[in-house]
Image (cartoon, rainbow, N blue to C red):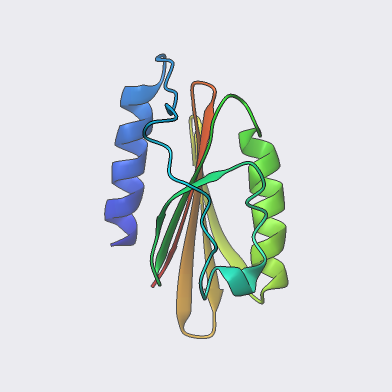
Length: 126
């Protein structure tokens, strides 16, 4: 699953690079109150729009240069580590960074990607 998600993210990023992708107000969801385990991690959602949330996956989109990939990487990474996760691997390919974390027997994949003026953040727990 982890390799499939990374491959999908990289393919999506590669095809979207060079285009100006924006989220229109008609498509953007209303504000969402995060549920466990995401709420318990005190993630810095800020100006992001939560586009998908389940018990094992969270996808947040920051439009119109609300945050840079590096800012998202630092703030989310800090929150993840404060929640007891330990970083074990980092992969950076073009505008996409994927970071693997572990906590006991659980694994968390954190992907942050820049697509035009947009930054996408995806977290997946296995």
